[in-house]
Image (cartoon, rainbow, N blue to C red):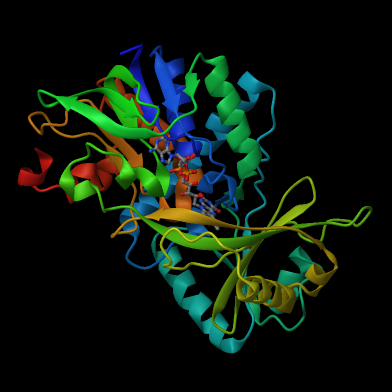
Length: 387
Ligand SMILES: Cc1cc2nc3c(=O)[nH]c(=O)nc-3n(C[C@H](O)[C@H](O)[C@H](O)COP(=O)(O)OP(=O)(O)OC[C@H]3O[C@@H](n4cnc5c(N)ncnc54)[C@H](O)[C@@H]3O)c2cc1C
């Protein structure tokens, strides 16, 4: 066993890198292992930090963790920017949700009533008031709702800053793939990597996004829990000299289809996204590009003048209950020292700071925040599976 550390983190997306940074900052010796194939979902995402405009019926526990996550994001990003001298591209303008036709509006109002009943701020606006906020919006829009509490972040800048912060804090980066968590006498002892080496550690965190189930050594119930949910997305750019066409994150429902546009300070506008059950497929299809642009242009016609800079697809780590899988296993489970931080599905950028807090709490023998109770790995593991 050539290398040893206190903790090995498998996976260097925003989740694994945030954990590695905070664990090292807490005084632990950390090795972060990632094959760096360039397919991390964290580099595809739109970067919305939007618990209010994303709250859905039946996802109360998820809403509570997302609200905790937003409350933590500001201080986390401030420390990140201070440590690295890099900007994460945080924006606090809020989300304007607009409805294209009366049917879309009725659906938005049903969701808005639910979100209000959950205590979220939501200001109803008629078409004219929407256009006061976003002057390029089509007058055809039926009406909308401002969720002023939502934020966004430039996830690529944020991910780069996390990586630098981890390096500054002394995290050792290993470019490889974890094949297996080594378990002996009911405890994690480290990991085996693809090049045949092993890395010894008393604690192991599996944070490999939608690929987490491929890591050997997990309890049986967890091997198939995380699945890839494909999302296709576009990145547009303003032509030289063109003033910004959008101030808020905009979510639109256009004859039942959802699209969002997320502006960045550097002139990028992210347009997304599809949600497809297609296994590990990451191809970009003509139909998706057409539909996303068509729906975006229906509400913001000026979109047609922006430059189509990039098309991409990523794999959200989805779970059967849409909730993340964060934490370890109880005493006597046969998996002492093994922790999971995966399954963040649609909200992994948002949840990365609070996930790092929860995992570092577990690593240092503290209880994580109470909001995590519904999201432990143990919910997917029966007693017999654990061993
Ligand atoms: C189109 C789209 C839009 C999205 N928009 C948002 C948004 O607006 N807001 C938001 O909060 N979230 C959003 N998400 C979700 C978010 O991107 C994910 O939840 C988040 O990126 C998951 O981060 P992660 O670190 O777990 O996974 P990833 O970023 O996928 O990282 C996993 C890493 O594990 C590595 N890995 C794989 N196998 C192994 C192994 N065996 N050993 C070691 N390393 C391994 C991979 O190389 C990869 O780097 C979006 C996702 C998509 C697809």
